Image (cartoon, rainbow, N blue to C red):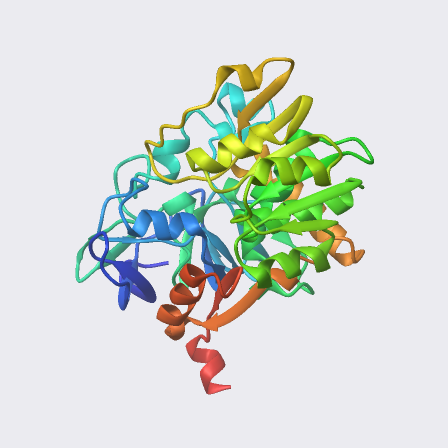
Length: 376
């Protein structure tokens, strides 16, 4: 791979400005890097937060962290994948620190510099625009582009017969919701679970709750269409988040209190309610990333008698193990994550972003037509 090879990418020039699709240059591959031709890239709410300046990344930058595609080239030291392999990209982890060694790569001690700095560890960038450095490496990939450079440890090989364009969200949003249920909360069969927010993360949790054979699954969301989608995916009850005295209503539905709750929003009000609906003992997982600083206030008395709150990143999952597990469940018909996805052509990026902001789609995925495919 030579410096000067062209790709097309959605470039964020400054916080709060629209993305601009531009020609960019990819840097030469380092020994442990992989060049992936992106076939599909999900757009996550974290991308929107970063574009607004709430999540740290230097600009100009290319975002996107739910990419999937085909390996086009590999660095000299890569022996895990080869050109032609289909891969899903996920967050970057060192695989060597204590947390990584103990099976928690989502809490890698070097997570921030590997995923949010916009640069390689040596300070160089994988991307350039008009000869100047362009920040990439967003969650180890920057996949809102026709091509992405990722480290070999951060790509997950998948079978070539899968619908590769749809698999990207398994690397973040859906992984986060499903992993929170299956890796963190680990509900017993028949347990009750309340999920606040029916976006990709919340609905990923609904799908996982069905796999875990939860007995009662309540989804709270302001949008009727999302509530009905949640019901179709396995929720046993759905409630409007604007309903008066919401906590009391939820507790009534679950028979006095829930075993577990999930907050995908991250606001003071939602987290407080997510704790209030718990039985004693009960556990709440909070997942919503609203920015680098997000103070919340909880009544300490609400945590007594065994209630707990835990924060979760990326479902506390190891993508190398968890993504294949989710795909296996999909093949069995037990994890229909594709029902969450709406595809948009890359050139229709503004429409995809508008739809995500409006809540009219759950998980927009950008699809890419490459020059050789246009000729075909």
